Length: 334
Image 1 (cartoon, helix red, strand yellow):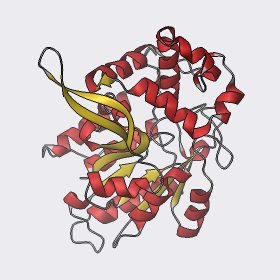
Image 2: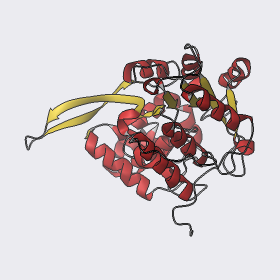
Image 3: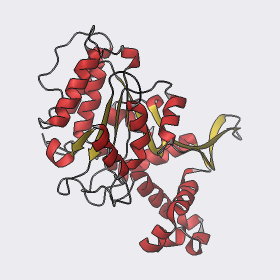
Image 4: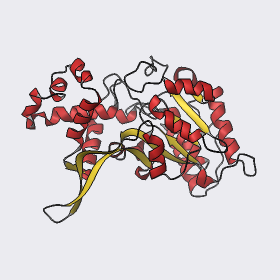
C-alpha cells in the first residue's frame, strides 16, 4: 500500500510541475529482467529531449486493457459475476425467469446450460441487469456490489484484485509525461465508478463497450439519462482501434493487453511511425493467481501470443517477472 501511495504522489507532483527526485526503482514489484528493462528503456528513449526517439508529452498516449491486464479476470469476467449476482437479486420480481433461458440455467446453477447459451445468453443477462434504469442508479448498483461482493477464491473485494506491478507502471508512465487510458471490452459504465480510485485513471479516460443511453425528463421534471437494452458499441478485438480513434483521437505509442481481444489494439499501436511499445501480460502463476492462455474461456491468449513472438513484443511472464501480484489486503496489518 505504501509503494502504491508513493508512486501515485510522485505522478501528481510531476503533473503540476513540482520538481522531485526520481525514486531509485519506480517499479519495485517487478523482478529485474527483459520485461522490466524493455519498459524502462522505452520510456527513457521517448522522454530524452533531443534524442532520435523523443516524443512530445502531448503524444505520449498509453492504453491498457482492463480484464486480465490491470485486474484479475478469473474464474470469470468480474462484470459477468456482477450481472449474475444482479439476476439473483432481481429474480423475485421476475418469476418468468424460472422457465426462461439463460436465466433458468443461472438460477438452477446449471453451468453446462449456461455455457451453451453462449454470447447470446450473456448479452441477455447483461441487458436484463444493465438496462431499464438511470445511469446514476446503475453506477450506485456497481459501487454497492463492489462494497459487498467477494471473490470466490481470494475472499476479498473484486476491486482489490488489481495488479500491483501495473499500478506502479501506470504511475511511472504518468510521472514521465504519459496520459494513461483504459481501452477495454468491459462496459464503460461498469468501470467508470471505480477506476479512478483503483488506478488513478479518471472516468473520461476510459473507453469501453457501451449500451444506448437516452435523455429523458423524470416525473419531477429533472433530466436523467436512461439505460436502454440495446448495444451501442463493442470495444473488443477490431473494435478497440476504432474506439481509440473515436474517443481518444491519437494513436497510442504504448499499449498493454493480455488476450486475443487486444491483438488489434497492439497491432494498431505498433503500426505507427517512431518508437512503439506493445506488452502482453501472460498468466503463468497458478499459485498466486491463475495460469492460462490458449484454452481459456476468459482471456484466451493464442493468436496474440504468436504475434508477439513474430513482432518482438514484450511478454510479461507473471510468475517470473512479478515479485508481487496483488496489493496487500485492505485489512492487512502494516
